[in-house]
Length: 342
Ligand code: NCD
Image (cartoon, rainbow, N blue to C red):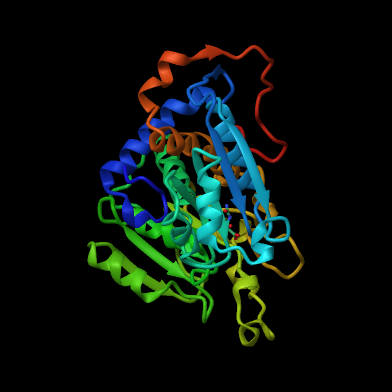
C-alpha cells in the first residue's frame, strides 16, 4: 500500500481488493458484536476545514473502534491557519502529535500539499472538487456487498452516475475506482455545465469501458444496476453559474423515476448529504423504506471500510482476529424507521 491515501490514482486493483477484504473482516467490530484494541495508544488527527458530518464522524468512530484516540479541529476559525499559518507548517506540527491524519479542505490539491510535509499517513477526506477516495472505497464495497446479495457481478454491470458530475468529488474518485474492474457500462447524466470532466471520461474509456453521456433522466434505464446520484455543489459555483441556476425536477431520482424507468432491483446510492430544501430536487424522500434505496446501508459501510484503511496504513491488519473480544454492552438492532428490512 502507498503510505498515504490521497487519490484513487495511487491504488492498484490488488490494493483495492485487499482493502475490501480487510473491511469485510472488520464487520463484527463495526456491527458492535466484537471489540478490538489493535490501535491502543495511537492518535488520529482529524482536520476538517470544510463542512462534514459522516466523513468526519465515521473516520473518528472507525479509529476509536480500533482502540485508538482522536484529536480534531474543525473550520479555519479555530485553527492557526486563521493566523496565516501555511499548510506545510500545520502539517509538520500535526505529525509530531498524531500517528495518522485525515484532512478535508476546500482547495483541490491541498491535502497532497499537506501530506508532502508530514511523516505520518495522510488520508484525503475530500479536497474541494478533487477527490474523496475513502468514499469511493465504501461505495465500491457497498456495490459489491449489494451485488452479492442480489446474485450480480461487477463485470458487465451498468452504472448510472447523475447530478453534479463536475464538482462532485465522490464521483470523480468512484469512476476511477470502477474503471480498475472488468469492463462495464457507465452512463453519465448531468445538467448542462455540470458534466464529468473530460479527462476522467477519456481515462475510463481508454480502460475499455463503455461510457455514454446524456443530459436527461427521461430515458429507459431498465437495465441499469446502480443509480448513483449526487447533490448539486452550489458552494463551488462561480458567481456567474449561481445566477439563476436551479436544478430541474427532471433530474430528481424519486419513486416515479425508479418505478417508471429502472429495473426491479436497480440500486439507488448517494454519498449524502441529500439537499432536502424545497426546489433542491435532490434524491427524493419518497423512496425511504424501499429496499432498492441503499443510502443508509452505504453510510453504515463507511465504518468497516475506514477501519480497513487505518488498519492497512498502520499495518495492523494481520492482528485483528488475535485481539477480538465480545462486546459487553447491549447492542440494539440497527434498523431506522425508514430502513427497509431485506
Ligand atoms: C460528499 C462530500 O463531502 O464530498 N459527502 C460525503 O463526504 N459523504 C458529498 C457532498 O458534499 O455533496
